[in-house]
Image 1 (cartoon, rainbow, N blue to C red):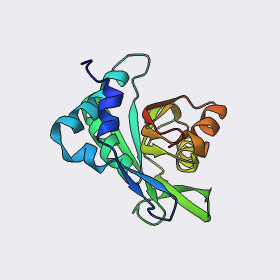
Image 2 (image 1 turned 90 degrees about the horizontal axis):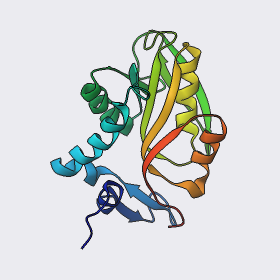
Image 3 (image 1 turned 135 degrees about the vertical axis):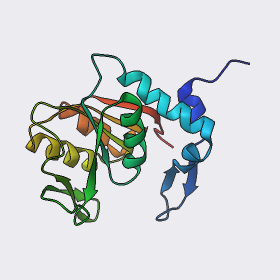
Length: 184
């Protein structure tokens, strides 16, 4: 029997919840990746080993609300760099910049403290999943408003059939994902 790749190992620990939050949706639940300490370590190490490389090493990790906080904070800690949260509107107490983006039904707004990054900072932008790409694109625009450079977007899961990863790459953002669920 051949050993599993890291990607296949992680895929085995992602739960699919049919018909949630609506009929026909196959929800990819990453919480089992976080519950088992061995699986969680494999997940974090997959990101940390990539970003320890001098060419990819960020100055700061930015995590998107909310599961990007879990991943981003641990990755930042392991890389010995700072972490900044990109939150839903109304959750940050200090002066913020904001970015509104379109959802399938309506819109949403995310915010970032104005002192979260400095001009010239190299930022890794991380979230759990890329679907339509709207949240990651909004996070990137926020960071760029403050003069930072988003060097790469990272996520555990890519849902390529929703077009987000293609849109993000077309905008010039390099992406790194560990598992895709194409055509499922």
